[in-house]
Image 1 (cartoon, helix red, strand yellow):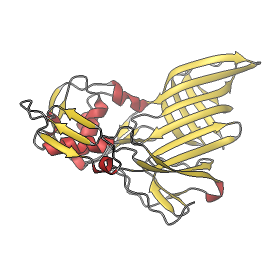
Image 2: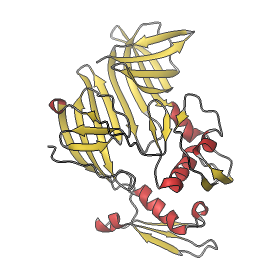
Image 3: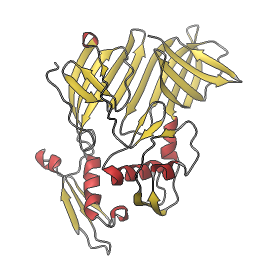
Image 4: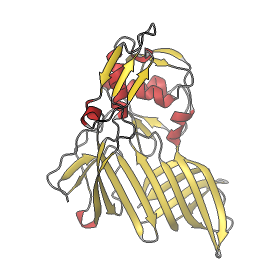
Length: 311
């Protein structure tokens, strides 16, 4: 399966296809993809800025090089890059502080011209979004998605912002005969057991909510917060929102297989008796070939994977 890295330089397209090693990580809770790669190159290879990576002819990454280096060792020229997808712009741009009324995804995403980014065409207006000082656009999109439908936004290739779950029923079939391993994973690193929020006048612990998932695990991590103006008319939602955030990636099933089948975040995947939507995709490559590890999350924003027997 061919792996190709390409970019424009001086009006021409530069393409490299001798991949030495590669790691591409996409996660439905991370607003950008992260690419680290090394390719054999010519001695006069220009350093890249905007990059496109394809695997088997399918685009899997479009973004900017944060760092690129051309080094020579043992008679070989090697280009190494560390890049993030263009959607990182969501974290690099800040909205004007204050109350933004009658918010749509379109009104958020047209606040700035973000090159190479697209977003889902959705209806639905949120009464307001409260923006604190130094709030990133990504945080405003999170607030919009949660207020609109108790959802969490995510990115699909190449840089498509989505706030609605994927609902397609055509599944990507992962090859059982190339299955390398499976794993069950739990992550409680960010979990809180209780949120206590002050009243608008500063009275502490006026609103309280426990996290049953933490209680079940005997985890005690109490979070104290001031009154959240984002949910001024429904204080309980401020507590539920933080508990949901803390439960992200709580449980996961992971399957690792040889090759890459073209899956994207949110796609329905089947492997044996397992049927679930991809939450995290890690593609790695080296001299021995390509390997893909896919995680299926079970948490406050992702449903439980359906299975009838996968070893």
